[in-house]
Structure formats: structure tokens, C-alpha cells
Length: 76
Length: 456
Image (cartoon, rainbow over all chains, first blue to last red):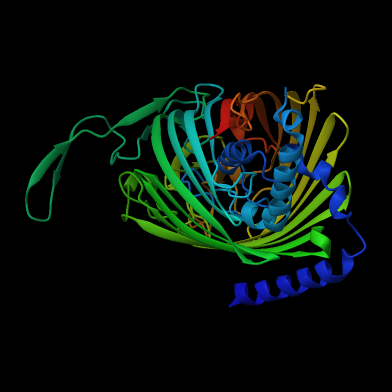
């Protein structure tokens, strides 16, 4: 139940930010050309990130942030 | 020649579509970061194959690993993308068992052991049958960090995600992961939804993941906190992890993309490392015994993750910051910077990276237990990963892109190397004879990776 309540609050906060706080930011659709570069895609280095996350998951007490915190690994 | 220069109209259109899809679903896809990635660019009907082979090695004969990965991503069109990922790990080497070095040699049993003597032992079962078994043991020289030299493991992991449109501005991602080791099984399922606002400059996402793990230690799971020499073991245990991630991605300017994720997860169940022990040390610095470690059976973590990407003419930069806090008393900060320089044709690039990490210790972390205490512990672990330390990673990546003569997007070959150094903080001096020993050796490791990505 705690997680359900937290989800609801986070979603409400995010919708508020998305609908209001960010409305003055951004560019026009025809100004997206730099965002189309590979290095500007947040998931363009999926394998690099997966290997790094596995290393850090097995050697440090923190994980996740970029995605889910679980590791599916018995190394920690 | 870069493919984009070869076919500018089509390439730009495809990349704009891909960028739009990425923005719509970036956080949702990243919510399943441990799995395959469906949101990278792919044309309708195209399959992208991303393969890598990584070699990892720690100093002082510690863990070595070889890890091949294959990522397959197929675009069915209409923003429906299936991604599958297959990972295999093969690990070997030595791993610390948690005990402190001593001025005398120390003998331990391997996980399957049931005695600290190598001589064959005779056992009588409840049915009256007798058996003779030799226990696998290892002896660590005086002054050396106790490590089990026979560590080896293999892991096979499969994950998949399917991305589908819910409406013109909303996309959903469903996924699952299965990971198998001979002493560990993990199954998880996840889902995420992402919605676009503000002329597709803003994307809000919410994802959830449920993970079920079965811990099946070699020789059985020890009774947490029990006397190591009694070898009290109970069989298998389970643990569960429930995780939610809220993400907000925002195009700030033409050159600046920002992303923030807030994550909360709660773990319940058997959270001990079944192979870790804690030394009992008297006031003279003599090791008088060992206990199996004992951790709480619940853990809640909250993290805030911020990523910024900046596009310059021939360069780009990525800065990520993360703060994590849990109810075990661990707080951590992470900062990572990547810079990328491309040649004028944009078919070669060099990417150095620097990562800095720091964590405080869990409130039950202790390198040893004073044997003059009460003899009863609530929770205690000497696992160095729960101690206070900072770590620095230096890395360098070089990649070359090759055009496809048939007009496709070609392929990319890259080589990446990283050096990781972990340095313990808050080093307590050992009592008596332990004061002259190196109780906190730290860790150094290298990672080398070659990756080949192509589409057909």
C-alpha cells in the first residue's frame, strides 16, 4: 500500500511539473535536429550502461537511478 | 562517409522519428535499463543487432569475468518495438569472505564445507547410515586478507521488452527478466507508461518493477548470526524487490536535454550474503572465532537521478548525478562525466569518461566484532561493499562507423576500457596485534569491452 500511495503522489507531482513548470521550456519541432544525434539519446549506450551497472551493482551498495534498482544477480 | 551524409533526407527523417520516439519513451525504456532497450532508433521492419564481449579483472587474483551480450531489437512499425537481450557471465577467482587478516594463518571451509578439518569425517544419518566425507577447506597465510580462492560462477540472463503505442502521445512498455545462476534465480516483470507534453519537449513516465529472487547457496543458507564453526544451515530462501520510477525528460534548449528520475524500492526477505562471515577479535588482536553475517530482512531505498546532455558542433557532453539513501544508513553520491569528440565526417569518435562515487557505511557494518561483547548480535556484516568508501572510474572509448554499401545505416565497432579504484574511508585501527596489518586493502579492477552494432 505504501508503494501505491507513493506512486500516486509521484505521478501527481510529475503531471503538475509536466503541465506547468516545463511549458515555457523547449524548442519548436523543426529545431530538433541536434536531439536526433545518437549521443543525445538517453538510451544510446545501452550495453555500456548495462556492463557498468553490473560492475557497480556487484561492488557498491547503491544501484539504479537510471532505471530499476534490482539487479537480477546474486552478486550482491 | 557517414550514412546521414549519404542520404540526408531519409536519414534526417528517420532520426527525427527516432528522436521523437525516444523522447516519448525515454524514461519508460530506461526504467527497464537492466533489460533490453526498445527505444533506440530503428526503421520500420528493421532489426538492429548489438553485440559485445567484455573482460573484467580485479587485482590480487580476485574475480575475473568474461561476459558476452547480444541485444536484438526489431521495429514492427507503428511504434511497436520488440527488444530481446541475452547475457552470459563466467566468473572465477578469489573473493573476500569477510574475515579480517590475522597474525596467524586462518583456515576456512568452502561454501560446501561442513568442517574446518581436511581429514575425512564420519557422519551418521537419522536412518542409521554412515558416510565419510572430506570437507573442502582453504588456509590463508598470516597477514593476508581471507579470500575463498575457489570462487566460480556462471550466469545466464534473458530479458525482453515490448513497446507499443497507447495513443498518439502515450506509449507503454512491458518487460520481463529471467536470470539463472547455480545458487541464485531471479524473475522479474515490469511495466511503464510515458506521456508527451509541450509539443513533445516534455515526457513524463512512470514505471514499476517486481522482482522475485530465490537464494540457493551452495551447502545451504547459514543461520544468520550463528557460530561459523557449527555450520548451521537451513536450505533455500527468497527475497522480493518492488520498485517504482518516476521520470521527467525535458528538452531545455536546442542543444540541451535534461532528465530526472525519482526512484523508490523496497526489498524484503533474505538479504544476507550467505558466504560472508565476521571475525570475533579480542582486545589483544587475536581472532577468537567467526559468525555468519546478519543483515536486516527489509531495506528501503530512495534515489534521485539527474542527467544532462549537451550537443556542441563536433563535441557532446553527458553529466549524470545521483543521490541515494536507504534505511540501512547508507547514503551515496555519484557523478559521471562523458565527453565525446567526433571527426568532421562524424564517423569516428573518442569518448573519455570520469566517474566519482562515495558512500557511507551501513549502520550495522563492522570490520570485526569485539569478542569481549555480549556474544549476541542484532545485525552485523563485514562485507566491504557495505562499508564507507569512495571510488573513481577512468574510462576511454573509441568507435568507428562504417557505411553500408546497400544503403542501410551501416555498423559501428567500438572499443572501451575502464579502470576502477575503490578506496575505503573511515579506517579503524585494529586492536593489539591487528594494528600493524592492512585491514582495508581496497579494490582495483579493469574492464575491457569490444562492441559491434549493425542493422539489417
